[in-house]
Each structure stands twice: as structure tokens, then as C-alpha cells.
Length: 467
Ligand SMILES: *Cc1c(COP(=O)(O)O)cnc(C)c1O
Image 1 (tube, rainbow, N blue to C red):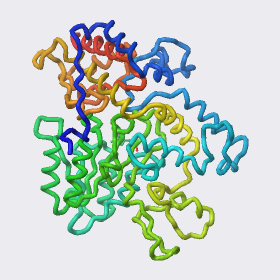
Image 2: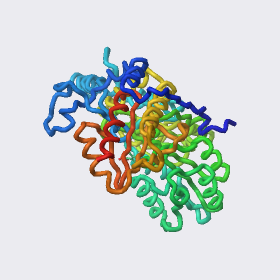
Image 3: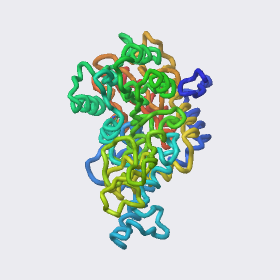
Image 4: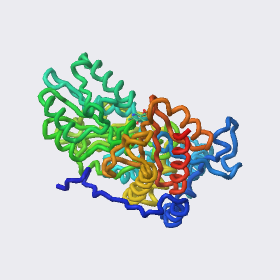
């Protein structure tokens, strides 16, 4: 077994003396194999980003600097094309769209559309096509998966989670505990870092698992912590928790389309993600989920009429397509993750998802990650250059090890500075997000951000700190 996080080798970017010059940043852009990918996106213009008027995206030429792909990715040019194709299918053939493939449309018939999305998404998360399905939205999918995988007993009832879990995840877990008539004070274990720290070590997580192994049923962690940007060692933590009898799930909201994942090989039990952050599928877009193949088996050994399968909350779209329209009320789940579907999925939402997936299909997560590690290292290098821990007005709370982070760096400012910095960034049309009390999260997205943008951001950020 490799001793690297998630089995990934570190990439130590080394920058020359002149790396803080604008020319150097431009030279990196000139050599960037992803330069052509930037052209596949509509970057909001400086004028539009500050305006409340609905403007055609390209009315003003100068693009803003968009470092907020960790919150909402920008629009691929393919999206309007795919949406239009879907609207045309609907207006042309109505209900026949369920089964008819339209020539020249990039989209399959509606019955096959979720599978078409899964076939691309599975490459992003490192899974077999049957282990992934496109459905619902992240929190709703977490509920569906917890209904299946959280089966507390009097003895084993605890859920181990992140101490600063994204509120939605916290609420979802809390409500499942209440649903089983358990007490969240006794059944929720919040795993946090050591005092004064932000990074949670794998050893620390092991110690929580050891402490609660007797009565813990499930562990649910974010692949990447949204606030600190820490990437957890999914592979090692999964293996360890399972060895202690826990079921292991991951919320990949910030990891999907950001870092390399191998959910199948890492033997993850289940996972869910949204597609609108690094995935660029659009606000509130359809999410995805993963169920390991070992949990998706449908066993007919007791007879054709008595399929045995893992319990889930069911609906007709989880039923095998071959019998979906028989309407005989005998549930025969689709083998694999598809069997967790419940409703007829929105073909409009799926068109948005497939549009952005068509961009990912042209590259690979290993290539995306290679640029990501480098551009984030460049951001870190410029931020830290010519300052020391004593003189610096901020602290990078994201781990410095590139194996332990994705695209995002979280900058914790000294008290009282956030307001001014946020205002200066806004005036310069630099979009990144603020988390009170003092964190600025900056995420250069490798598909569309440039080294020159990183350079401009750091220059302005440092100037704003001086004032
Ligand atoms: C973005 C995010 C969510 C959002 O959930 P939705 O159901 O898509 O609104 C939930 N959890 C985490 C960890 C997130 O980062």
C-alpha cells in the first residue's frame, strides 16, 4: 500500500525567482494545455457581474476573474445547445421523446438519459457505469442513501461525522437519528481537529473510530471539507472504518470534478455529490450518487417473483426498465445504483448535466488534477512570497500538502479585515466567496481559470490588506 493520501503521489511545484512577474504568469498560460477549454465556457464580464440587468453574456468584452467554481461553476457554451435540443425534442415529438432517439441530437431518448449521464459521471468518480446514477439533488440523495445504509440497532447506532459539517449534511444526519427515535446527543459523534487546528489528521479520525467502534454504525465525511478545503484520505479512512464494522459514505460536493476519485477501488459503500460546483452543471442541477456494486446486487435465487435486494426507499424509476411499464406492482430493481432512482427524472435538468459532461468527456480527471495542483500551488506561492508567518495578515488554513487539498485555498484573515478586502475584490470584479467571520475561499478552476488571473488576484489581495 502506498503511504500517500488516496495513493496519490505528491507533485512539488517549484517556481523560479521571477515567478511573481506578470510575464511569468503569462508564460504559464501560453503553455497551458487547458487554454482551449476556457473557450468552452462563458466567463461573466466585469460589467455584467456588477449589474442587475439581464445582459447578453458577451456584451462587454472584459471578463471578470471568477474564482468561485467551488460554489457555482460557470456556464459551458454547450449548455444552451443541449437545452435547445431537448426543448426541440419535446416540442417536436411530445411523449414519443421517452423512447425515440432524435438524429443529430446529442441527447438519448428520455428513458436512457440518466444512464447516458452515469456513463460520463462514472469516469469522474472512478466507478463502473452501473455504480453511478444521476438523480435528485445532494441533500435529498443523502436522505435516500441514509435510509438504505443507516440501520441502527440498540447496540450500534452512532453516526460519525465532520465537526463542522455543511449544515445540510448535519441536519440530514440529525433527522435520520430522530426518525429512528434515537437521541442525537448520544448518536451523533462530531469529529474535530486538535485545539487551534483546522486540519484533521487521519490518525485523529482513526482515534474517533477506535473510541466509538463498539456502538458506531456509520461514518459520513466530506471528501473535501467545504470550509478548510482539506481533502481527506478517503481510501485509508474507508478501509479502516470498515475494518471496525462501520458502513462508510462520502459527501463529494467539493471533491466531484475537482480531485481524482476511485470510489470502486477504494471500496466506498456509498457517496453522493452535487454537480453545480466544479461540475458546472448549473444552479441546483441534478446530482449524482454512487452505490458500490456489492450493495446493488439483485438476487433472484429465491425465484423470479422474489428478488432480494438491499432495502431502499423505492419508486417506479428504480424498477428495471424492461418491466417499468408493466405496471404490475412487483418491484424488480435495476441492478446497481440505478435501482435507487425513484422518480421520472427531469429531462431538462439532465440536458444541462450532459452538456457539461460533454466537456469533461474531452479530458480526464488526471489531466485536470495535474493543472489544478500546479495552479493552486502557484496561488499559494504568490500569497506567501515576501511575507513571513509574523508579517502576514492572513493564514492559509487549507493543508499545504497538495495531496490533502483540491483547487481551493481558504484564507483566514486577521479580525476586522474581511469587510475591506471583500469590498476591494468586488470593485475589481474578482469573484470569490467569503465565509464569516474571516475566511475568503479562492478556487482557481483548472478548466477555465488562468495563471494571469491568479497573479492579478494576489496583487489586489495584498494591496487590499495593506489599506
Ligand atoms: C454544496 C453542498 C451542499 C448543498 O446541498 P444541496 O442539497 O445541493 O443544496 C451540501 N453539502 C455539502 C457538503 C456541500 O458542499
